[in-house]
Image 1 (tube, helix red, strand yellow):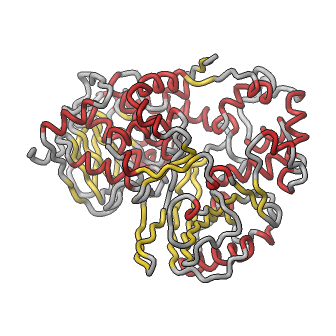
Image 2 (cartoon, rainbow, N blue to C red):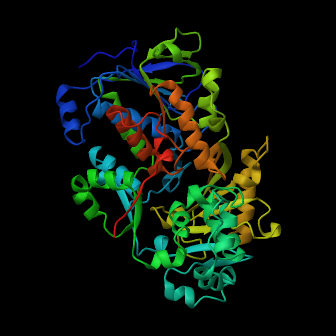
Image 3 (spheres, rainbow, N blue to C red):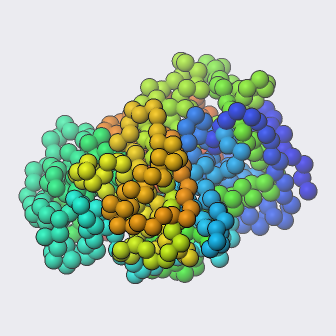
Length: 561
């Protein structure tokens, strides 16, 4: 067994999430385990300047994927640079951030409640990165695969204006559903899109609401797109950036119609996507083949299976030290002297690292930086708060329909949504449950600027009332669970890409010693966070990335056909 690795001078630091008390957890492994782990990864030769790394996660806020990004970054470092000392700082006494599965005993056995993300989509480049991680962690037997043909995959609903509307899942069903309340006016907007004028040449970004209304019409923007973005960003389509959220659509308009581009069979992706896909394709042919036909997936013991597996693997890594319950006070760096970065934690002596990877919420990181090196662009990132209420009813099949759940657009009248709900997930239709399990999500952009929130009793009452109104459920839930996710989802508002390009220039002031990853920058989902951790570690070790935001400055698109 190897002794615990003590924090030493010139180490690579990766912060995950940070808070008051400090505890150090050692990392131990056997030589044979290290060799087995290293077999699976594409190796990158570390540059000679990387002597130590620190990884930082969420600090004052609870960003949805701060914990998983920090864990992932430390894990990739443990595999790709096993000789470099790594310190992972985590605010909470548990690892994984909002990947948190709560298990509650009941008369029906153990009921699992997901307090954050609950399912993962496999079929994107970022999704492939997560699949590759799952393969390496030997978690394939723990997966629950939800087929594309299951009701949870095929049946998706929007509540509008006072009833559930099942969304069309094919072009034919779109043509056959013009009288569906939520689809009224949508088809005419789609048919007119190829004849719309292109945006003005001097328009560098605009809101999603403006973009969709301009290219299609307001009905599609208000009734469909606003609902979809409630489910992903809990955000306001009049604030969110079209360029950041829909980069392919934004680029397609430069060449004319979005519809014509979609029908051309010409697929565009970034050079980074192309490179990552090529790196991971061959190693994951087997697991991807076994997941063929999967819409989304989860784990038998809940989504935190992934973060727990990462933590176990890190504890076996001799070059990794994990500090939980950590609270960082400042990050010091003297630019003119090119010295290592010093991190102060409470009354402890400052620890020095040659490099830092921050997965903190961008404004939290900015507040730790020396005043001359602070970045207004990092400070400008906003986030929304989401209230999550899990409910379990002992009666099975209590829902009036089967499906993934339903989203609620902003166009629904207040009388139908006084709770400011964003959507409802039918958990028991996705993962096994003896009774009926649902999750209600409330708040998001509706609660922007609020300083007080419903307590647990009020939150449960709001969720029950909503379900009675929308689904006619009158049974009293046997179990409930309430989680207030404060500032959990960063908002990519209009001008986000340009601000991140400026932030990249600001962070260059650290001469390549400070890199960032996580959901403040280029994606809020679990896959995005894992991908950003991999990208920033590989970029750091290869010397190809100075800040983690380099891609905002010169994003190159390539055609696959």
